[in-house]
Image 1 (cartoon, helix red, strand yellow):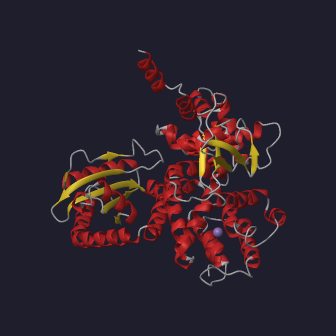
Image 2 (cartoon, helix red, strand yellow):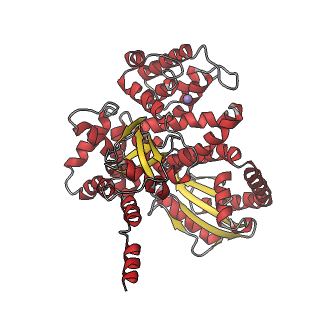
Image 3 (tube, protein in one colour):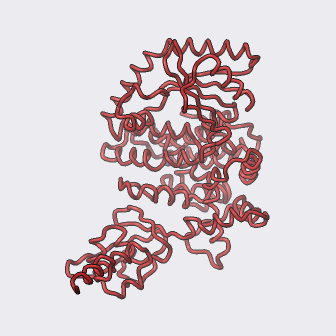
Length: 524
Ligand code: MN
């Protein structure tokens, strides 16, 4: 069992006050879950305490670590929300509520809805810390998935693979992403997972000794160049990501050169290029395989130099070169900036760094994507019933940005932003469908299937019959009643907001481009 000491000891330099806060949450959660057990038969408290430990490892602040301890206390521990707020404050309750809310959106394997669900989760979270707690929660649940009833395992594993791992990737949390993928893979496709594991084992064995001597040779060369403070390690490619790459390369393992990559971690950016020079002096690089993600970071902020060289000892080898700071960020992503007392400051720093190093602003578009939905809430006269309170750091960020001169790009981005123009609604099965704002049941029906639209007889929203011009709102469950004899009318064209629905209605009414041509032909 993870102890309070384990958790506090893993946190990044907590103050006495912060330690006490986490310890209090620990005791509180332990009591709240005392009566429950996990599927594994272990005490339930094993779970929240493990989640809190993960959050501490990721360098999260005391509030978030404590929220990890209490994330199931309201829903499963049956503690009144008021009590959590009284004992631990509004901010913590906000995170716990957010995590609970995320749990209500489930992925049931309709791949065309996967991106909608990812976006919905990011929008619902409205505070990055909510997403990070949810990821830590999922990470621990995946580690104990074999105890969950068999019929639930696949759904949970698939959801982890399709929804949560990509979100971790978007947050730049590389370690979380590949951990989640490799925990889920065997439950989603046991045969492929076993096959890939076997291939990887064979291949790594083959190159192991060769790689070790390449590693030594490189170390010698770097030391010769006066690079003293560096370390190297060998990183083995994740199973799921190897599986994906194999699929792209016609299952030909000889075409994959980064199963085992050599990593060189140095103190400063200049050292990265010096190390690259040393590597290229020693081994011939493959042309076209060099990538400078330091000057051109990936959209999620990932930075590194990648090169592929030919070595006499180990054949073709990928070398990745980065600074300690880049290494930490590649593993922990946004979470690596969370040791700041105030998250707002952390993001400010991120943005300043970005300007200094001329990062593309794309790197932060996901943070910004959390802003418009909140702006709507704070500017709206009355809050809608389930609108989240605006966390102060984000509100500040929004204000700071609206004052910055020359931030047209940002304002433009807000206008264009996905969330301010979309509604997310559900099928009775719980699949999420995203539609433009003010969409109606007609748009919904056509988004599901043309045939469903063409035979739309009636629609229920949250169990109640509604008229076809009803504007759908976020979270509505929409059920379409179909009848063979029902057909579109021209009135529907006024109600439909999506071009897809309009096109299909026009076609069904004989007003489409095709039918017009046909009529012209007939007239001749
Ligand atoms: Mn949980």
